[in-house]
Length: 112
Image 1 (cartoon, rainbow, N blue to C red):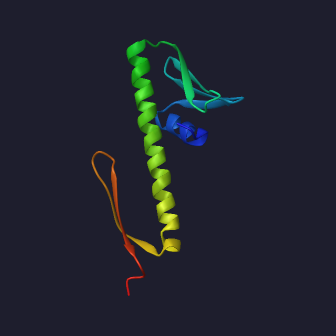
Image 2 (image 1 turned 60 degrees about the horizontal axis):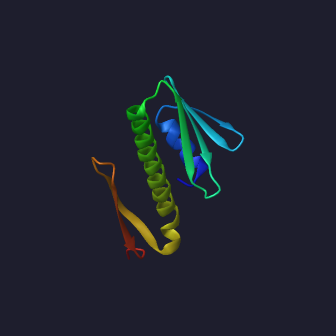
Image 3 (image 1 turned 30 degrees about the vertical axis):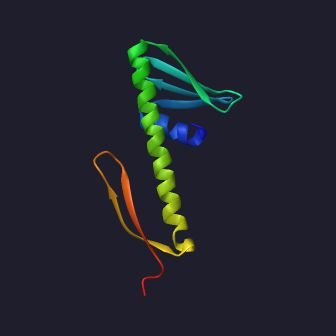
């Protein structure tokens, strides 16, 4: 998780109330607060407090990770939509599967 804006959007997707405090991102869920801080290596760490045990903490981290993955996926899809015409391609079809994977069929050329 390198992108702070995608992480913030992912936190909001998990129904967290979010805020920024200096360089940290703060997420509040019912009875749990997580403070996300970026280390010198660029990696985010989360410190969870409140009504949280190991099981709930792991569940929260997994859900944030899945939500971040969905944010990355949507960003890439938007880029493909935006950049395909300039690369001589057009979107023929797009299908979202039950597991939220996306299949896109792009055609090369103008189709004439």
